Image (cartoon, rainbow, N blue to C red):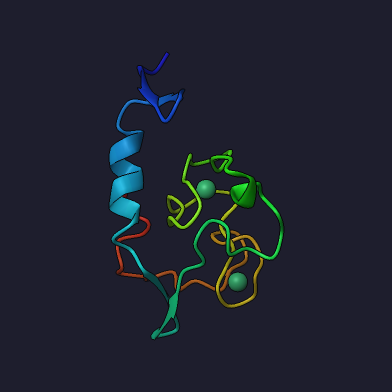
Length: 100
Ligand SMILES: [Zn+2]
Ligand SMILES: [Zn+2]
């Protein structure tokens, strides 16, 4: 059982607020040497609740924040598929997104 901490009116795994804060410093993803800007929560074409003031259900971001890398809501800036699953990202990405 992992330790939980209160965060934004809910509870999250200990260390998650720090991961979310760190994610705000990752503004781009690398695609075959090309850097593309990440899609912030609320900018997705699908309505995930950001405009209604809801936290991202997966990573607890608020509207206008970047998702934690690996969040299942985050869209790929290249194909708008699910980031991390679509295969667009470089495997040897050195932005640190996979290291968090
Ligand atoms: Zn998220
Ligand atoms: Zn993609």
